[in-house]
Length: 393
Image 1 (cartoon, one colour):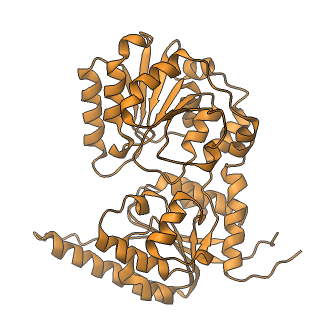
Image 2 (cartoon, rainbow, N blue to C red):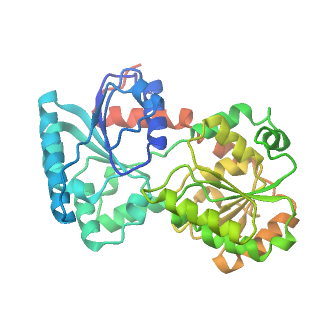
């Protein structure tokens, strides 16, 4: 194991939700206090966790004058961003430029970024690659990836395979780094202290049967399909059933989308609670622990920890098999596989009426290792290895 060394990172994070980023920053700094992190952010809603653990925050500037043409507005903003990157050259060279949720337009700045940092690392999040449906954007993003020194994703994962073959990336550039979960760390510490009934009581949902629908406010979670499926079979579910919608983050259309879902459940006379505001890790744990059933049928997923969190909190999990995770490959199934959305209603009834499948010990142990405290040392080592720091006793 390498001894911690001092290095600097310019963390570029545009077009992404920062609740994931603050955990990344917090745990990297916890694992290696010598790291000097500069964040280049595209909005000002920055958490205290980030502010307390970064050396500096640079805020992206946008053109604020009135321009009728969207194309001209985009060009003006590209010029502003170019000038900000040029301004960074005056700060001296960073050891690593780490681009999170990398977008196709970073292609236009790669020459500058090469001057700004000694090494370029891309940290894909999943949807930034898997849901890219423009050939032009795919081509430009592929050029960005081929220009990087390291890509933080296992080559044999669904996301990694898409990157390697879709972008023509040499597998040697892929690093088998995986995202961690602060919630799993918290669950490991508190799961034995709080029963499902305790969690329901603390949430004011004592005596309710809780079905959690997805985990964010993106339409790709297929909330409307889930609502329709439950509505068809509501008479076969407990009369005290309440649907939970964790919709704390989404895109700029989040509010309108959540309002649409609220109107839909009201029209169908279903009881529902929407968690729209940021939740502390304790509140996230309570919501996971209180839930009876978790439905996960989003369109694509590169592999997230949410399914794991609900499983170790004792939920009956309904999971779309088109999202394949290797750790699910145990027989018999310890979740309810959904092969297509037409069978969702029947599967919900089956899950409600049956005993919860036994979660294999191997899977429990695998999940427990997925916390950030277990994951982040590998990220720190990978960064230091990229910079060719020598191993020290």
